[in-house]
Image 1: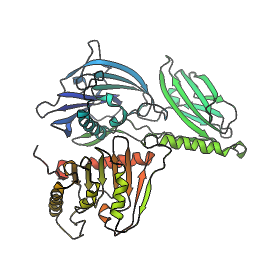
Image 2: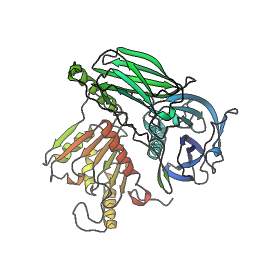
Image 3: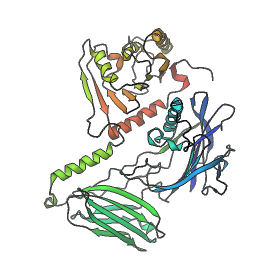
Image 4: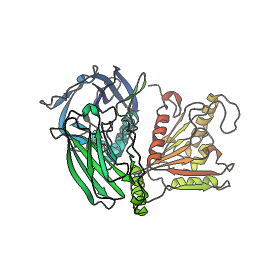
Length: 509
């Protein structure tokens, strides 16, 4: 086993290590070896750098002098960070867990070491409103680079180094699985892989009814050579369970929870993310992917079906869990609206969007054919505090006239129109436009983020069709669909660079 390490610094051209931001060390069986550094993004007059490496295994840092030598993790880093706070917690992947999902999708122990090199948790440095923009820009870059969720609820990660202790199976399927009997769904069977059968392990299983009454709460022991444990509880149609596995020293090594319905395992906790980092040689994916074992699905005799309402409730609960990452209330249905082609089409659509905008809202428009003249439509937003980010991908066909035109001419036309609007209420000072080139993507999105929530909409047509040529429908995406769409949009944003930015024109840096 080696360790994959990422160290983030906010610095200048002359001093790349001015501020330590965040570091994470993950166990990995990856056989590749690299030791690279590259620039992620520019934040004000500073740049965010990541130093990445895969090295031989490194012991947990010796903290006798309350410091961590980062040179252990990357040969080019000569910095030592001083620890002001440390803690250790268990990170497990289960739907009801309150922490963010671990980058490795199984139970791990996280050793967190906080420093005041950049962000002091105790005195709230950089939490003043005037520095909010700096924080959000940092979070956004870290989100984009690491595929983790810094913006949402884990800002303590600034000035933080996390050393992950994981189980030997962290990069494969966990050796534990739970089944019900083929004909009696209230008989639970927990199995483990043969290669771990010589260890003594303890299992704690709790089974709940749909009304949250405890039906079973029991410890059992995997003795040496034993690969399956059976648990019995009273007959019931629907149930949910959670179980924990401990080693012989009492250390938690695995934890899981789920629902059962009519003998069918609804294992919704699919683990599909990987930790992704950028390199000069391209995107690298490390650890994190934990395949889910095939689920044994059995259909019990109809006599077991007792109450369809309880089935409906448990499905609703699962759907609620699945959409928990959505900022909208679970009781509110996604918004969808049809707009007929008529002279009021533009204003109707803009009014629909404006109700989600408040001071300092941000709009990301991902639309392959959004055109220069579409800016006139967006002027109806009439709010100079709004930040607008546009990503298009037209080639040498003018999206307004469909006439063949050199891309450079269309870019020039776009810039001239933007400058023309500079004296209006259109937020030119907060506009960024990238064009990624012909046929880079196809789908169309409007992503709105404000201080209260985020809303993601898909459009049936491109915005340059809002002049009354076509009907258009706008549909809100929520739950796991929203999460997958955001990942897709993030992959598009990753292609936005200085070389394909139309506005503002790129400075020489």
